[in-house]
Image (cartoon, rainbow, N blue to C red; front, top):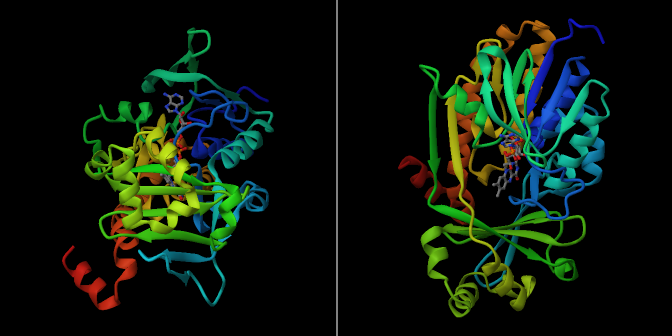
Length: 383
Ligand code: FAD
């Protein structure tokens, strides 16, 4: 490799950072990727956050570009529609697209991240470092200070471009926030989420190839299938309500009156265990602009536009960032200044719109999905 090949540091080896490494490696750049956690392919404990995700068109397109779509889809489960559970336990299937059979896919977060990391590591021009956390940054000089979490040593990394794919609480974005005229807003919603699980032995009771929804007005539960026949169930509810369910009896009564069929599916004992095993997690929506600083730094994925998960587009949108970035590299070659400026101006409106749509889709999924269309129109008129 010649010395004039530009170097790029990517912070964050989650879904978006590892995919971005694949795209840029194909273009021949020298890539160093730093991930603060240990290698999830070797880790004994699964890390937090949703166990599976809905992959859709935007995400598939990006995976196709780096030759990974087939491998991912072989490990994914098609969901061709929603299956609505009413309070009596009766269900109704609503197919997404009767005519062309388009569907979304349920895919394991860890498996997908593992596929992307393995693909990135196959490039001779990519180096991936785990347990390596960005602790400081001097963007003007192109310097990142990284701490090795295993040895507590810190070291400096110099590169031509720094890409922050370090999630909703991005350290790279924190640098951008100090620049005059940088716009930033974050909104926490009153609802949190808790993950439960239907074990493989009872997975057959669930209608396959659907995203299951228990819409209950102010709150809801959803379930996505896993390859081992289990289902990951996510309860979205206000923190106030979660706090009210502070003992087994209250929790059991709540499930009996709102999700009676889920008790059998999860199993009574398991439900008790799982419900009190973890605290509900927060959900945040983040908008900012621009996404770059000169020709030196860029944020992508959740670092640029974290959104609430109700539209199932956070990862898909982050993958689309990688597609757009790749198109800009194709057109403008090594001109990082133009590439970053164009990325910010082309991406902002779409990213802000999808954050808003994700917020709106919570009302759709938890409530409007059960209502006749004239009622939906009335609600929309009042938003
Ligand atoms: P992250 O996944 O947050 O990855 C960031 C990485 O950076 C992490 O590995 C982290 O360890 C690392 N990191 C952070 N700080 C540092 C540092 N200082 N130094 C080094 N490394 C660092 N999206 C969908 O498209 N479909 C869905 O169905 C869907 N469902 C969801 C359900 C839930 C409950 C939630 C919470 C989210 C869901 N999402 C979904 C959104 C999706 O999870 C995110 O959009 C996606 O994970 C963003 O990927 P990312 O790589 O940008 O950020």
